[in-house]
Amino acid sequence: MQSRFALGLVLLVALAVAGCGRQAATPTTEAAPVAPVIAASELVVGFNRLPFGLLQGGVPLNDPNLSLDVTLYYVGPGGDRTKPVTTVKAIYRGQGLPVGLYVAYANLDRAGGWEAEIAIPQANGVQKSRIRLDVSERAFAPMVGDKAIPSRNLTAADVPSLDRLTSDPRPDPDFYRLTIADALASGKPFVVSFATPGYCQTAVCSPNMAVLKQLKSEFGDRVNFIHVEVYPYPFGESFQQAKLVPAMQEWNLRTEPWTFLVDGNGVIQARYEGGITFDELRPAIAQLAAGEPVNPAP
Image (spheres, one colour):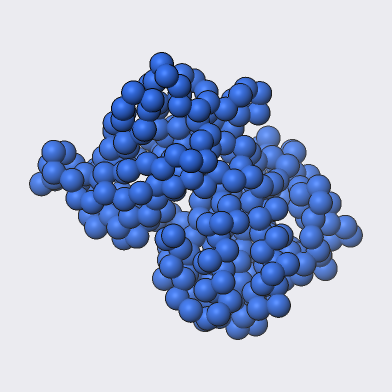
């Protein structure tokens, strides 16, 4: 299972790299085949965020007007790949990201093999492509409903300057005031992002931080915001050695970036792997700030 999703993340990196140097594709009259990529390393029994990237003719598809019907089939023991379980809508969530991202939310009620049939509008009709999804009983990363782990990540008080604490070239000092343990003790809801803007393999860490900085300007009086750098200083050397900070290991995070929304009781209300946008995250943080249960689905 891990190798399959690892391959998906490698392909997402390919999307990002291609997007940096080539014109993003839009649907063409030739209707070149489109290859969907699942941009998540783990799916679990229950409510899941399903982010997809698309490649058309080897070029990233980045169409803000495109929405996708995603039909899910359970193909594990006792399943039938001809009988759909549910159909959900994946909408564009690529604003500010280097690649197009299309996100759906769905309840996956059984562990085992699933297939997602993605209906992709083309100039001469609809192309349907299926990809494999593997669903586990339990995630590696902390799940919604879990208590947040009280990590004692480094803060600005522990280093002579922020460039020893983060690879973000334009850090906001407010993100480095608190440890996760401090935030839990405060009884105030918080957002924690595990990201490495300078060494992000999926090229979405810096855009994610820009979104979080914007949201902090609106909700910072009611919600604490924390950034945990993925690699210890010196970041480049640690990146080459795949050496992670203790908090990444304590949270059992195997990819980056990850963003978690934690309520005032220390319970994880939502989690996001990979790229996030203002439009997707703002409603969830507004609910978090108001002390309401977070419903991340649009």
